[in-house]
Length: 134
Image (cartoon, rainbow, N blue to C red; front, side, top):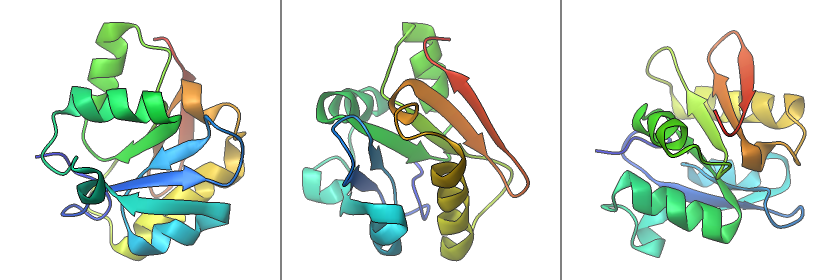
């Protein structure tokens, strides 16, 4: 089962900034994080989609995936993909408030133009970024 924020929800977050800087994420409150709006993945009929389908949709729609699922960075690396970008939540279970704070930290520390071509790993203490392809 794919794990988005929170673990039982899947969202597709699109930014108000130029195309290619939207996010795929997971909480109703995430909709208001720094000018980004969210749509639940279930509304896009992606709640039971394969990881590759979610990545494809995100790439086509100019979005970035937010997940705790380690399959996403593996798939991006194996494909030598240049996108979509990924924000990966690591190091434990997060409350909705903690998830929001992690995403806020990423959005404040990574330039918006770099998100669509990056894997950003965030935990309670740090934000690390690697440009795609890997």
